[in-house]
Amino acid sequence: MCGLAGFVSLKQQSSVENPKSVLRAMNSLISHRGPDGEGTWIRDGSNVGFTHRRLSIIDLTEQSSQPMVHESGNSLVFNGEIYNYRELHKESVSDGWRFKSDGDTETILAQYAKHGNSVATRLRGMFAIALWDESKQQLLIARDRFGIKPLYYAVVDGVLYFASEAKALMPFLKEIATDPNALAEYLTFQYTVGERTLFSEVKQLLPGHQMIVRDGQVTIERYWDVQFNIEYGKNETYFIEKLRELLHDSVDFHIRSDVEVGSYLSGGVDSSLIAALASNSLGYPVKGFHGRFTDYPGYDESNYATLASEAAGADLFITDITASDFEQNIRKVIYHLDHPVAGPGSFPQYMVSKLASDQVKVVLGGQGGDEIFGGYTRYLLAYFEQTIKAAIDGTSKNGNFVVTMESIIPNLGILREYKPLMQQFWQSDLFGPLDRRFLRLIDRSTDMQEEIDWSQLNLDAVHESFYEIFNNRANVAKEAYFDSMTHFEFKTLLPALLQVEDRMSMAHGIESRVPLLDHPLIEFAATIPADIKFKGGQLKYLLKTAFNDVIPSDITNRRDKMGFPVPLKEWFSGPLSGFVQEIFQDMKSSDRQFINADAVLKNFENTGQFSRKAWALLSLELWQQEFHDKASSYRAMLK
Image (cartoon, rainbow, N blue to C red):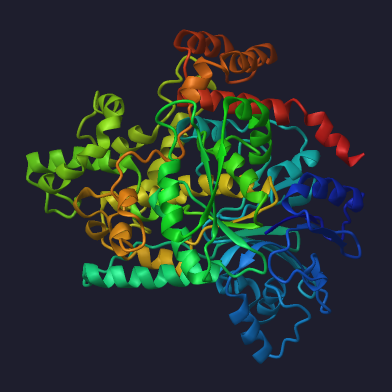
């Protein structure tokens, strides 16, 4: 895993002014992504240039340094890992390619020589690549299927700039301004749902997409998508056996490394499973890493992490995270994120990554399991309402529902802690259209009516974007509520969580890998009927059943998993109250557009405690301070 950046002129035969200065500034802003080396390449004529920071994981020699320039004139920068590089290497040797390195980078050049612009379809892994074809005078940029690796771009004065992180584009923007459409999405979901970012001039290349720049024209196309083509003719045993085969295979590929591999251990199903499978495949115990909060009851999950480590035979390293850690590091978290996203879990992830970086350079995580196999409690809450409606209407067997009222009852105990949410969820529009009900369940903007000037934002456009994805019958052909819910979050929430996964690990110069996001596995998972994945309303039923011999029963049967719980309610009303209020006072003095700072301060002081609203607004203000208020310092990097 590394960091890349570069530029290409969209004006034919036109060079970029001061290309060395341009690349020097970009390289500096992504330096944390690659502590092991750096390189720069500028094409004769200065219309194309690449820069790269290296984190050496596979083939640690100089032969795999980047940018990698072939004798044909083709040049490549690459961020990520191609796990099937050995197989591709062997294939390319048979085709006559003479390798000068033993890593995965050169395999991309070799595969491009044979497959051209379809090269991304040949790659099994996580990646963002930028490849200049000298003979075609063409730049190809591609991002992996799930968005594990990031790629941002901006077009300014006829030059396309691109980078692994949006901050590397800041020196070139005419102004660092907020995109109101993206802000409306963030306030609704705590992430954006398309190519927009909170920076008005910066876009992200979407997962499974590639960009081709040729003759001054920019073309973006999708090369991969997930399709829910359900296999109704197979039984549960078939899906269990196939799932075991594919996940074992994925883990075998994901542990390929020339450095030591460790694993995050949260105490949940996914990370526990991955750690156990990795230890088994490696033939020795992996090192596990966990963060806990011990100052307040209800936030310490280290006992489950200990159970998982014992099952995997892993050595467990634990960091105790405090309010002081939050105060000292939250600005760094927002800086590395580029923009606030996906809830407060990014902070403990930052702290655990820091812990892991003292021991390993590669760490495995369980990201993706909730979106693929249905692990979020809101799925059960949404389904509970629909089973009641179906039982009343007599429509339980019409295909829209995968559980019956009788079968779901034993699993409702997991909703015990969600009674306040249920009261809010059911206070209006009960039994309404499924898409509108799910939007209501995930919409976080409803309690920010006073704090936000909604007259400047277009919520209708946000809702339209939601409905377009949720009701997309090209991906989810059958009207299955479960598939529609998981598909929406696979396409929107998951990339946001992967942004956190990437940035928080790279902030400390380590590589995070996610074996549950392997495209053969995902393509298979999309064929599993919902009534097998979500049997009887049991969250992650199939995954737990398939690996009940691997995951400790106390973990598979637990009903109190909270994700990555952070005691912000206690901190914000206690030791961090003054810290947070000072930040909101800064918001008021800065007269932020879209924000009513008086209402923010008033409501925070009245409640004196944390809510997702406080987190969202705090993150937004710190983002404004880091990027908007420091715009001149970013521009000064070019001088």
